[in-house]
Image (cartoon, rainbow, N blue to C red; front, side, top):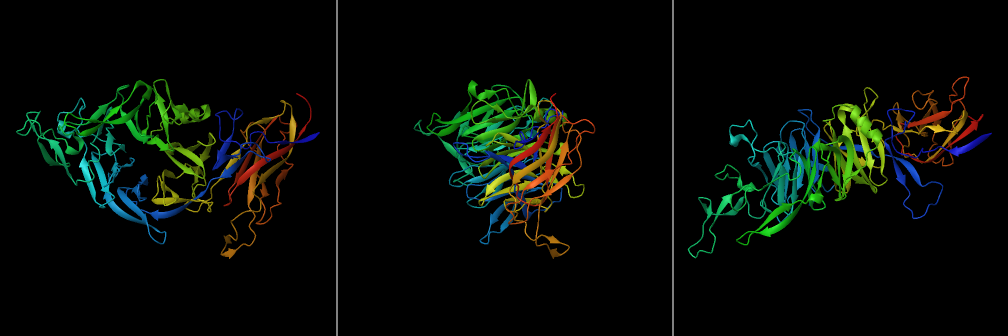
Length: 575
């Protein structure tokens, strides 16, 4: 006897296994959204909602074929962007149009450019690019400067000249006016005095020394000082920017595991210092020297050290008081972790970790995070494998993102590599193209106006492990609400646009698929429309299947909100 039942697990996230019969579940360019109500009500408690489209808003020179390398929004609302081999300041004029101004050049290699801001009266945006320089831009005076990074306090074993051993930072953070940078080659990081770039131009006071001893005035109490330029080098060959008042370098070394520092980020007023196999969290405190002058020190207790590093520093991202990263430790790797200051929590599934491991070399992986409409997303992309994984912190569900290749028609990794919030919008930087994009909730194509493919593959459905027939499938979604009115075909307007959805069915766990079958979603105003498929599902020849998997695909440029899915089945006999 036929029965109508909900399709189990249809409104769920991605959990695709290497064995299809285990779990073929995929959610592409859609995400799960749960009802935020205290008590369940209505016919559904969660929906599948399509992602927003992207709109290209700025184009940058593309001479070395390197796309976006970094995005940052300063405290005054100004946006900074690294594209190709240049740094730009991006503002919005009175007409709402974005305008870019070239600030400086950076190294022309495909490394990330990491930004931070010092704060204070004369706040500076600072950045590093893996070279031996710290770059700075004054938000107050709109002046650009660059400074040599400190000499390594621990030179490499094959070095013969310490003057050539300048540190090469890949990350920079600022806390309470203190600038901190890592050295990508070892476990040491360096920092400055508070607000050393602001308020006094390029000058600062240090203690006057003679043979390493502090000198005093004739009263024997007042310390003698001298004024130096922060860009000048002391006798030890280090810029005064990185020295304390005694002309000594200010640095920290790992206290837990002496592994190379791959990333540093600031979260909840703490510095998360990632090594290849460890994580150490530092807390700053202010103290005074013997002469009453304040300076910063950093401490890290045993409770703030973890056997969980980041082999690939580009995967580390922060958002909403949380840190995300692709983890690596002494007993394993290829897992995604999140921490809000406490013990790190693993959020990746076995299937995701298994897939990441199957890629082999993932050294090109990167991650970023952004928030939109109450959702917090961590995006992890492996370009070499053409895969982008997205974790929704709000629902704790995974889904996939993609950008369609207009030439091959293949779904490739999602194009953006960075995100930042500015001017009330979310902006994205393209990994391998010259575009700055903006998330557009009213656009349902990508930044090149190519289709965004929305796909849901259901779990494997069985009924008491007995053969049964799939008679019909119904989907409840936002029929009759398409905003894609009057699209152009051959130069003529089409007055009645009716989006379509494609359904495929598998009776072997998702290994092979039957023919494509199409159904409409209703023209604008046809709210009563019901999208359904009846009959014609694969039945396995002379023997009825004991399992089914459904795959739904929508490529039309419309908003998709799926609220329910049901099917009619006929069970023929018991197992």
